[in-house]
Length: 330
Ligand SMILES: [Zn+2]
Image (cartoon, rainbow, N blue to C red; front, side, top):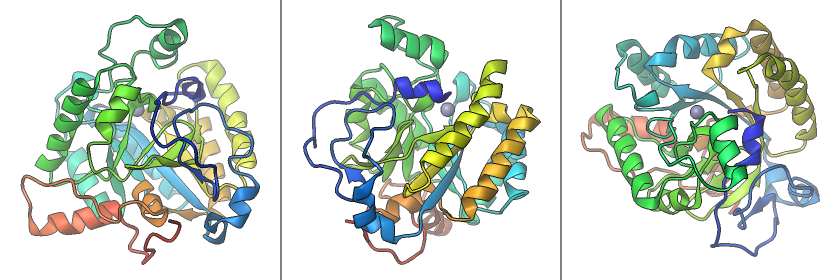
């Protein structure tokens, strides 16, 4: 998970190609990668996107018992700037570890009740597919992401199985995810097909935010630090600052924080300054709230095995911004 993930992104094919970016959204979201000139340009100015206050979505990736202490440090760093709703990308069986953490789950319960969102972020966060394929794909899967692109190269059936496992894990906790984000933002075409069978309201690649099931998308490259190595820690903060400047007029800016960022105070300080700056002009929203505002599903229809009186409340909080926006940009 680094800016290099942009080199991979989603590589889906077929479908809704053809319509142009009328209001910053496009339906041909089947190529992906680096920002395309014009995606967030004049069309936005004329569209309804431009009439809404621009949004900021802050996500914490790779949430699991093993990463929980770091996730808490990220939360504390964000709250030192502002108590905003976050999107927590939860991995049910992170690195194939079935461990549970009462502290993690109870805190996520509390956060959900406070207006945060829990989204499904793969199942194991490990790429199980054979290490072959064309060289570019091989490099992305094995070098850039260190074989964590779980949904990059698997088939439709396997993607379906993993999504089912993840949803079942969420249901056991009374949670109802409105969004799915593939580990390392790598979603192969076969996995794309499986994903469309489920009533998620959105997914994201490194560079775009997709409404589901139609794949209408908007350019929104993730601002992300490369904390894995020293060069990345030195170079990614200025790169993030530059990208934030380039996205000044965009309807959505996404800040993606990873557990390993928490080990580097300089990265946290940069993220805090960036957050403070972005909040001067942007409304903090969960991703599901942004999807709802943008015309996606207002409520998830993912069924719950164990419905309870609180499930409805959780589901609502998890999927809408309670803002009264009813498909304003459709
Ligand atoms: Zn991840």
